[in-house]
Image (cartoon, rainbow, N blue to C red):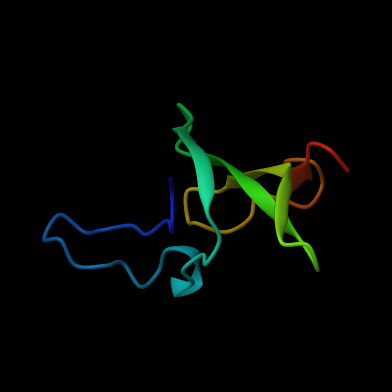
Length: 81
């Protein structure tokens, strides 16, 4: 399960320039690194008020950790919406 995505320098220190230093607070279920360096994450979408996890979101991040707006127009795709 993926809890957050962070970039580390070779020294092991967090990179402050990756993803605007924002840590995801949602749970991922899959992670893949594309050959061009972009990151694809699949995650459960929590539905309120039932708090059930029925939908899957596919999110693509650029090499800088921001949403890749060339993917599905906004950087994420709701697979069951």
